[in-house]
Amino acid sequence: MDLTPLIDLRGVGVPAGGAERADGPVAVDPLVLAGQTYAYRPPAPDLRVDLVRTLGAAWHLRLRGTVDVEGPCWVCLGDADVPVGIDATEIHDADADDPDMRSAYVTDGVLDVAGWARDAIAEALPARILCREDCAGICPRCGAHLNAGPCACGPPEPDPRWGPLADLARRMQGDEGS
Image (cartoon, rainbow, N blue to C red; front, side, top):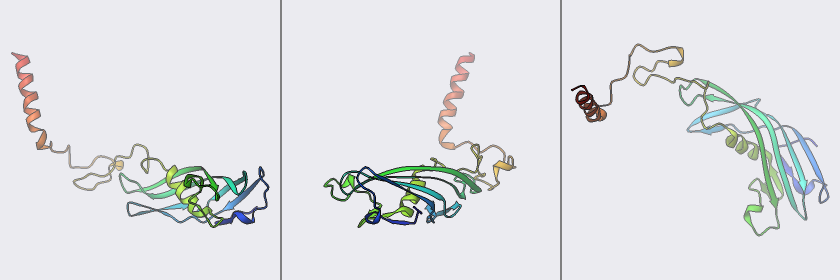
């Protein structure tokens, strides 16, 4: 079965205990995180959806695929390219009284594959999107890109709020020397 952004589960002719598989590219809306847009390469990643009919009108749904997420690094604002693997599952039973048994991605029997994929990509992202693991960021004083090397600003001025603690440390070192 070819994968489309929307799958009408009512039209999938699978008996209870049976399964259907849908493969193909699906266009997924880019993510917007903290006002920054993160696009995908490819823009329509190849995905696989496994549709397993359980008892009655219930479904076990699984979404898998891989995509590269591209956008600004969270530390230096340079270009970041993060590979993301998707493996998400949903249960949908339209007749269930328990709302946890009804997937948020199924409306009137239609599965929103593109919306589910967007959210699965967001959930699979690492805690921070970085251009590289050891990103040094930018200098807060001059704005130099520190991945290219140190800037000319030198070491930062000590925070004056730590002054009393530094004075205490000096006094304690002076007591040890006497």
